Amino acid sequence: MTVRTTPPDTTPPTSEITSVSARDRVAAVDPAALAAGLDGEGSAFTPRLLSPAVCREIAGLYDDVTRFRSTIDMARYRFGSGQYRYFDHPLPEAVSTLRTALYPLLLPIARDWAARLGRPAPWPDTLDAWLARCHEAGQTRPTPILLRYGPGDWNALHRDLYGDLVFPLQVVIGLDVPGEDYTGGEFLMTEQRARAQTRGHAMTLRQGHGLVFTTRDRPVRSARGWSAGPMRHGVSTVRSGLRHTLGLVFHDAT
Image (cartoon, rainbow, N blue to C red):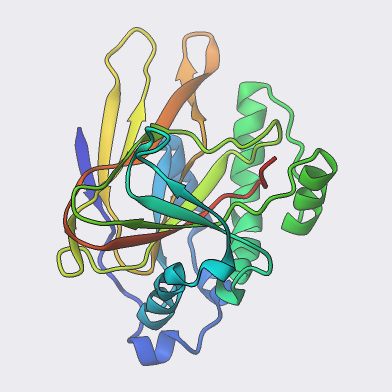
């Protein structure tokens, strides 16, 4: 299993980056590097997308149950251990802005993957237009998610599909400082490989940085062209502290 961490932080100090909009930070992401990472391993880190102050603000929303449409106890459903909550409308401004800004960055990769795999590419140019299609199909519930893990908590390997309409990429953003606020809790991905053992990756999420990863599979070159490499994601056991993450899924749920 490979172990990865986010690259060194080259963003300005907090006092400077808080004056830069989420759209500007997303615009600074290198699309070619992002596509290369996703092609190679099904996931790729971004530079810092949220300032530490905004990370703390979003994590602090967890105890305000009025901001969420549902709370999931993972042990109850045998998903693992811990809790997560789905935001309700209206989404927090930072969450909505970031989700809207990331969609056009990821869209060319999604379309390229669909072409390689011979699949339809039903995604229009804007997130609003895509969500309108989801809603017409009965997928009306918002999917941005705030997760909280304490000591002993973990998340089983899974996929976030939620309905027939699926965007093939999603983003998770670390809201706490690993090694200070919590230990353990690495983000996990596994890839089922044809006629070979499953490959695994363990990644540490730095505060404010994003990890873009595949929702269900990625194109893998084979002797007959391109095939789909199934992938799942989860979280390893948290050893101490509290770990909060923001998850951005780009299709709504039934």
